[in-house]
Amino acid sequence: MDYFQYRGKSLYCEGLSVQRLSEKYQTPLFIYSRRTILEHFFKLKKAFKEISPLICYSVKANSNLSVLKLLVEAGAGLDIVSGGELYRAKKVKCPSQRIVYASVGKTSEEIEKAIKAAIFMFNVESENEIKRIDKVAGKLKKIVRVSLRLNPDVEPGTHEYITTGKKETKFGIDEKTVQKIIAGAGKYRNIIVAGIHLHIGSQITEGTPFVLALKKVKGLIGRLPKGIDLEFLNIGGGLGIVYDNEKPQTAGQFAENVLPLLKEIGLKVILEPGRFIIGNAGIMVTRVLYNKESLSRRFIVVDAAMNDFIRPSLYSAYHRIEAVVKNKESSLNLKKPADIVGPVCESGDFLGKKRKLKIREGQYLAVFGAGAYGASMSSNYNSRRRPAEVLVSGKKSYLIKKRESYQDLIRDEIII
Ligand code: LLP
Image (cartoon, rainbow, N blue to C red; front, top):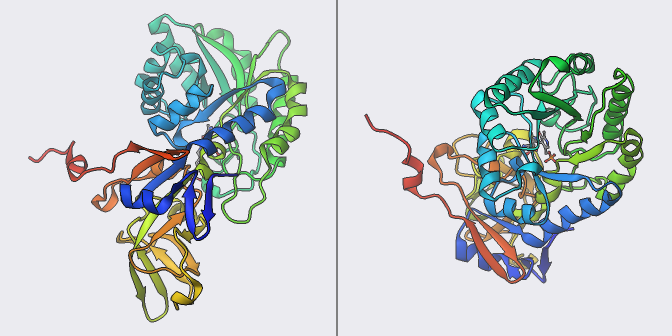
């Protein structure tokens, strides 16, 4: 459920016309619905109410400060993966005891900053990392809580690039090594091994991979030596959403699938959803620059490109694309399916392929499901300025990121 709906022929975000927003803020433009973000967060919270988990929104999905603030004020914690994300978490005053930190490559500097910020927990991804954290914590005279990220070797049934819980991937630690680290944890004087972390992939539409991974955790915990008491189980993110005709599990079904095991395991639970909260709470609007016909294809050339929204190019991801204001069927005679492409100089620069769209030059298209991994993965490739971002709440819109200027593009460069 989201609050991007057509009223007659015109797309609205909550109470505002997307056409008007696009004219006001110009394109390419990301538009987010505040109400959708909050509803998704509260759906998950409600589904897991019985065990009241800590829900740490995954900052990488959309790291705009206003989005983070909204979620933190609604009670969310934050799942971070870098010093930059820690900086953002602090900017929105996320209580430090609600911050968890994953990543296979934390630098000593990042570890130090996170310890000084008194974050709740590190999710550790290798034995050498735990040694490094122990050393930095020792220097700072602090005791630090960590969870060990288990690589359960489970197939999540998603795109290869966003599969993270299989043994071929760089993520997490195999069970044998997890057991070894836990058994020898006494030697890390500045560390408490407090839990297990899992994150098996992203855009997972089925419940089974989560259940299989949790069964592995249960087995692992059952095999721990006596006297070792873990306190937390972080089950990561990964919940899939609807982009096309997927039928992903709902928050309620997800909870139904995993709650029995979580209760058997009996640890305090942490969740790290990203896409589920923000994915369908955002669209990207782009303006048609040219209709173009080549010998074999029809193209709709738009003002947004792979630098603004890379999911189609990078993962061949499908995103629904529709006219912001639908034309009368008879007014246009463009029946041939078209590729929607941007101005970037690469053939991989497309937002959609073979779409039937009746659209004129100057009109706007909405790319749906662009809230997650859209703006946060945008770049300046081809010296393009990254888009503006707007948050809509009812009948009000707020500019939450200005479109970059040409000065921004060269701000940090040095001519010698
Ligand atoms: N926790 C950890 C440790 C993660 O690495 C991730 C995402 C999440 C939580 C949140 O996952 P989510 O609930 O959003 O699935 N750029 C890709 C997705 C990469 C996901 C990376 N990790 C895409 O556009 O599909």
